[in-house]
Image 1 (cartoon, rainbow over the protein chains, first blue to last red):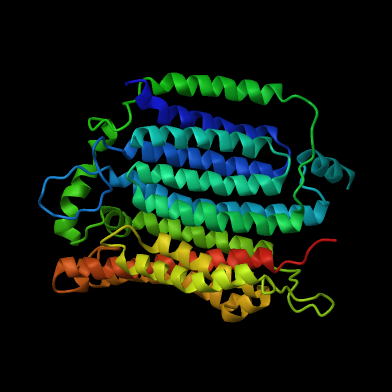
Image 2: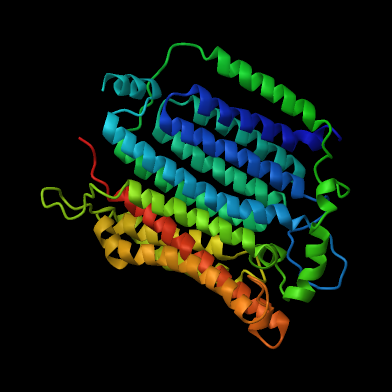
Length: 119
Length: 325
């Protein structure tokens, strides 16, 4: 079971690499942003996986005083805010992509560079 | 059984992520991202993170998809095909993946109660929250109470990003141009209109419930703000951009964005004036626990207002932009 208990971390690693691949190997700017959002989702998965405690439950205390086992609330707090910050930065990225499309008529990286050189 | 379900969800996440990167059609990729977020939300729920699952479902599967589609309407949905093989990136990610997977063998297995992450401050939060804050939801207590300073920073980041979107997409608004037919939304489609109009009040009501009940159950300003924003955006999608803008003009939205963050910071300074430290709410009431609860309510309200304003304003910035020829 030791090995199966690491499956979450392997999924994290592979998701992180899929996101990184889209960011560095794809020339399309929207694809890069989608890769960035996969990349950050992978980080969220890592944090939430670390917070899990075997046999625990969501950290909402129903009967104070009774001994209960809870998962770790701190990573939940960090990721909760990170998700909303993530969408705001993605929106900012999309706004920049829209402006690039209007200026250059394309969102492919190599075409943008070629047109920029011709100016 | 639950463990097996978790494995299936994680495997589906991998398949969806590969499909997002491989597909040449950006519309398909965005819809797959929505599915990816929903799977991720279910995974978070299985891992006991109810608050995070709510946020991911509302933001990832809802708002993020709408913003991407709004941008795709302006930039087209086809990705150019490249013939050269990306050997160098593949080598880089292969090597990094190998290193990271090698490193996972040193990590504690999933759910290990003796893992280092559970030994530091987390037990203190779990132990002290009922006594110091008088709340059930430890996530809310940490977010708006113990670590409110962090959260204030996050709200300011969201505010900055929102104003960035508004400034970048400021000119060339389509609205008010007489030569262009007004966007009519989905008013002429019977089923989306009827179903959508039925759903909007319940979406907003659920958002308000999460806003005011976040101390005792899953919920809080971030989730509530996202869900209320989804309700408002759904109204704009159904009734057309002009009708959506009419109920919440940009002036009001920017006021909400800044006002929420201002409320958060003002609560912090009020704590100082009442003799405590920045963002210490115990002076708000004769009973320190009641003071904490009041402070958390106010701070969460500030978060909810800023998140709603930012998300709706970002949607309008994309939806109201003139289509390029």
